[in-house]
Length: 89
Picture: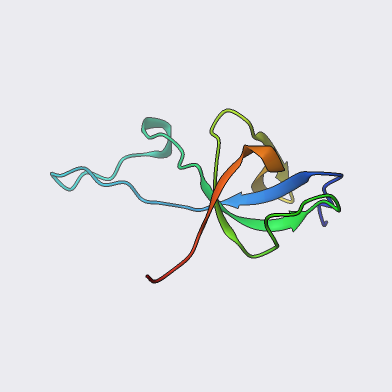
């Protein structure tokens, strides 16, 4: 199934990060805060600043979490995107 966001909405797949304490203990998902970084998988027709495939930082309080075909996604308004992340210098 494919998600097609409407208007200025963006579908983001949250990036997975393993969090390890200084002593080497791996924290379970329930004990850590989810990162507000993800990869854009679909954009609505009114989105101007980001495109599919971009890595973005987004507001933690703006997204709606959805589950499609067993995968978790976030749907955010374009105004909740804070920045894009580029590799390199």
